[in-house]
Length: 68
Image 1: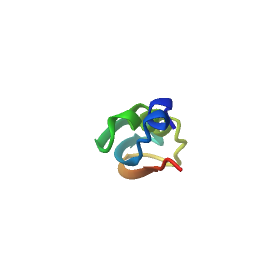
Image 2 (image 1 turned 90 degrees about the vertical axis):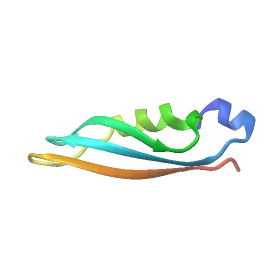
Image 3 (image 1 turned 120 degrees about the vertical axis):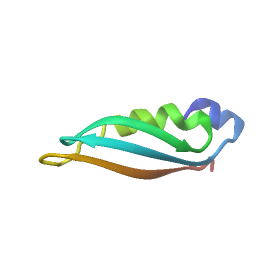
Image 4 (image 1 turned 90 degrees about the horizontal axis):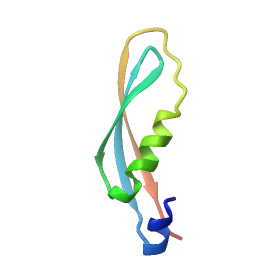
């Protein structure tokens, strides 16, 4: 959780799309959500380890951030 989001009580849902080629994340596109979380989501998705023998896959994931 980014420090700025905690300090300002920001939460929300970030929707991101990832392009995976040959099992490796090649590109992350943020589709929607509070910009304070974009860098964290991008960094997390770029660390994904995928299993794929060949080809290209596009997937979408939502990340929910809550200040509790």
